[in-house]
Image (cartoon, rainbow, N blue to C red; front, side, top):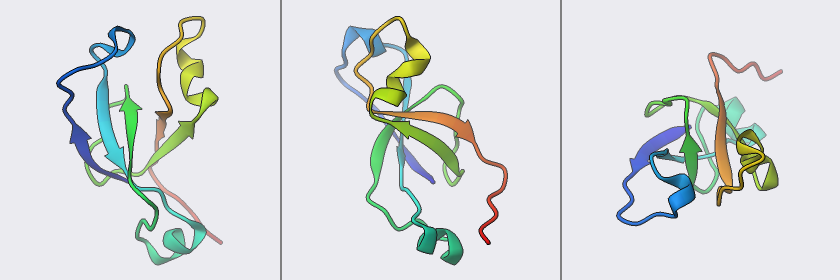
Length: 88
């Protein structure tokens, strides 16, 4: 879940112009309870996710894949905006 945005005063040239957000992950227990319960982290966002919105995130090497063959110093990428989540 998106909880805010990040403003950078300095950045690597490869990520100039990108938007950054702060997100908190859900565990299965958190999804069932309806509230995020992980540790917040910074995510690169090209989709325009808003505060309070649930998103899907790729991390690690997978976070850099949308930019191939270019290499970007990215560790978390907002891959999708979620309309609904069903937990059974």
